[in-house]
Length: 303
Ligand code: FO1
Picture 1 (cartoon, rainbow, N blue to C red):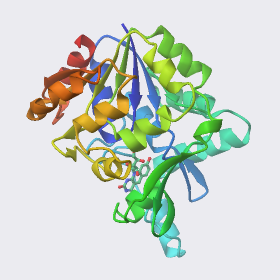
Picture 2 (picture 1 turned 60 degrees about the vertical axis):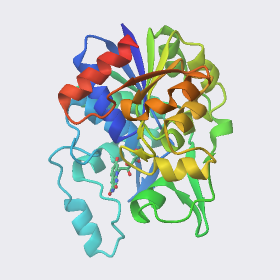
Picture 3 (picture 1 turned 90 degrees about the vertical axis):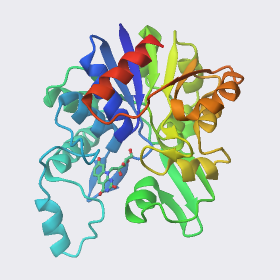
Picture 4 (picture 1 turned 180 degrees about the vertical axis):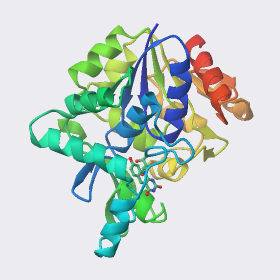
């Protein structure tokens, strides 16, 4: 079974681990909206966590970076007066510097990612959603912030007026993403922030049509009640004028997905989700460990 998984950060990594345990031909398409320049290196958090996850070296407790990484570079940089709020580990920095070098030598982000993924010894492919820069931008009374500034530096505290995706209209799904989606037996939208992880992909012209025309698209809601499993999804959904719950997720994905896996706790939303033309499937969506990850992956493939 050929499976394409659209992925953001922490929650997505869990489902990817679950999918890896099943006998599927897996391709991960990773969000690029929170890519950022840090310490002179081009950091691609969602691409990197996907690569580290499929390579089995991800830090699973923190949800980003490499397991057992050190922070010697950051310690030295802090002594030189550099602002070090973005905790980039040493091995992680090496990945980002290698990528930066490849991009400067003219490789696309897709090509650079493929080299990094292979160097890490991982088999499942990881594809950035697009090669052009798409920057998730959070508009606040303090000004326009990139996602890392909003979430990591300012701890998600500033009031959010709106969120938009700078550069999205000039971007296109890559040929590799289009081919993978067309050949897929199942497209999975991982439990990710619909505004900052999946939103930047859906904002790229051609993406909605590409995904909606694939065989079967199943998403997992990242929300239980009105709270996400992690991250600022609720606050940003509200800023986007959407309900911060699984019905809001279904509305954002309507027309793209065929089914949405929703927590049993939100059974009351089922009629309204079904009415959108999105088949609401109830179950346990929380992934507390490897057994949960594999169980949810199986449910997604069977849905
Ligand atoms: N998230 C944090 O909350 N604090 C950090 O210092 C931090 C560093 C970091 C370094 C590399 C990387 O790839 C991701 C990192 N993240 C950090 C996670 C990241 O900010 C977001 O969770 C993702 O962008 C959302 O998917």
